[in-house]
Structure formats: C-alpha cells, structure tokens
Length: 473
Image 1 (cartoon, rainbow, N blue to C red):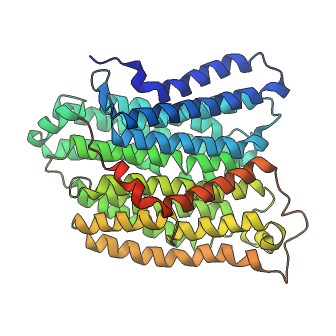
Image 2 (image 1 turned 60 degrees about the horizontal axis):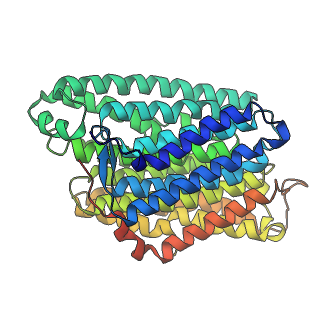
C-alpha cells in the first residue's frame, strides 16, 4: 500500500493550518487573530508550490490503497482551488477583521478547502463521501458566520439540503457497493457491467444527488440563491465557486473511472440535467435586481455548461481538458465579480451601481471584464472554455446540447447588460454612500481576478495541453 504523505502536501498543509489556527486562535488577542489568516494564505501558497513541483516532475500515483489519485485532474484542480482560496482570503480581510471569531473563520475556510481537495482526488466511494462531509460541514458554519437573520436562514437551508442529499448520497453508495461488491472505482468498473441494471441506476442517481448539491445543479439548486444572498459576500463567493470545482471533478472521475462500461445511460441523464440547469439558471436571472441573487442564478447557468463535459466524459478526449480549463476560467471570472460586490457592501441592487464608472473606474472596469467574461466574450478565459466545452459536446454526439448552450449564452447577455448599463449612467447617480468602499484588500482581489481571467483567455492555447493528461485508476 502506497502511503506516501508527500503526495498529499496540499491537503495536509490546509489541515495543518486549520489545527494550528484553532489552537493558536484560542490564545491570541482579538487584534492579533489576523495571524491565522496569514497562516491560511501560507498554507495555500505551500500547496500551490507542492502541486507545481508534482506536475512538473510527473509524479502521478495513487495513495492509501488507491483511494486517492494524484494525476493531471487532481493537479489542475488543486491549482484552481488553492488559487481561488487565496482570492477569497483576500476579499475576506476587511469583512472579518476585528471580529471575536476571526480565527474560526480562517480555520473553517481551511477545513472546507481541504475537503474540496479531497473531493477532487477521491478514487473510492467511501473517500468521496468522507470528502463530501469535510467540504460541507465547515461551509454550513461559514454561511451563518455573521449571526444575523439572513445568515442564519441561509445556514439552515444550506445544512438541511446538504443533510438530505448527503443521506441520499450515502444510500446510493450502499447500493453501488451492493451491486459491485467494491467501493474502489477500478474494481467497480469491472463488476458493475454485470450487476443488476436497476440497482446500478438507482445507486448512481443517489451518488449523483450529493454531487449535484455540491455543484448547485438542478434539481439540487434551491439553496443557491438564498445562501448566496444571505451569507457574507466572501462566503457567498466561496459557496458558488469552490464546491463546484470539487463536485464537478469528482463527478467526472466517478463517471469516467467507475461507470465507463456500465449499460446505464448516464450520458443522456447528464445531458438532460445540463440542458435544464443552464436554461433555468439563465431564465431565473433575467429579472433579478439583487446583485448577489443575479450572480447566484448566473452560477447555476454556468454549471449547466460545465455539466456538458460530464455528459461526454467517455465519448471524447476533449471532455477533461475542456472541463478543467473552463473551471479555472470560471473561478477567476466569477470571483472577480464577487470581489467587486464585497468591495461595495452598500450597493446591493443593480440600481445602486448607477454612475460607478465615474466614481470607481477601476471597479467598473473589473465588472465589465468579468460580466462580459461570464457571457463568453473574448479575450477572457471563459470564452475559450465555452468554445472547448461546446466542441467536446459536438464531438461526443450531443450537437443539440451545444446548440442549446449557444442559445442560452446569447440569452444570458441580457441580464449581464442590465447590470453593466447603470455603471455608465451619470444623469441619476446612486444615493449618497452606496459607492463607499470596504477597503483595499477586496479591491486588489478584484483586480487580480480580472487580470487572471484575461490572462487565461490570452494564454489559453498554451495552457490547455496541461490539463489533458490521463486519469489514474
């Protein structure tokens, strides 16, 4: 059994930072608890460095009885999650500074980040469920961190949906074990093709229910707008970004490694879910006036596009690289928009952004880049990501799904423009004080994320081959 702990440096660095932060935070005075935030950022930086070394030396392996795979998908997923965590830490500084539970915030962020990394490399059903819990439980506490009415409601809805679909996921895991007499993906891929069809189908639906909750896809999307609207802006940015990265890569690995030989028509199921998710997300966003709820429905629509890669996971070689690149581009672009929302805490509606291009031109520029980027406008990374994922759908035999995605992309321009248009209105400026900024950290985060989104679009052709390596069994 391979028990090489050096293969898990990114995960262990976050867990180590969480444990150290929990102990140190109990003794540090309130004015010094920012040190735990620095520790969390250092853990992310350590994980990024370790991941870069692993990918550069091609040290692909499976560890701990093959329960965790360290391969190309794991490496790229780690880079996305850890870089996104750094951005979220940056936009959180002013939000939690001076709070009596500031250290706990950083600890919870590290723990849920470690759970997301565990989801990415999970190569076994039990490992997958354990990662689901580790990624979820700290996130429920983060959603209610502000301890106000809306935050408490958000945390309760998040928890109840997570508990319900987590139980469903556990039941699905038990059914797949009963059908395949194993939990390791490699062994399931051998035994499931001869297992009873109904047992495999119901078990797969149960496991997918938990992953759909993580990603915020239909029909497990009901929590997304309420949690996004009720949680603090940095937490809302987290729950609409990182769990999706973990859930989608975990789902891709499960389908590709464990069910490639099964007779269950899961590609059609995923294609239908992708179509419904992107359409519902875009239609629901049309007439939103709250910026956070608009971004919530926007992220549901984006998940619909990303699910297209899962639908063709075993049908085309383009699926993996399109999924990983789109996730990287989406994370940077979405977090850039949310960083602007965090920087302008009093601008809660679209109307509150009237005239911001005159008063805050830098933030307005980031919003233009990120919102048009989410549509898929060149030269942002999402443009190339959508091009790749649409090509993968066509190559995998789902041309109708790609056509529907193009229609949805064009339609999404409407609600993004509803947000962008007021930026340049000078005749009726927003009420006094709505353009007051939170501080420099969230602003720097927004500029950084916007620049990364553009860089991924410009240098995308050079980066795409890095995400095309094989998955380990």
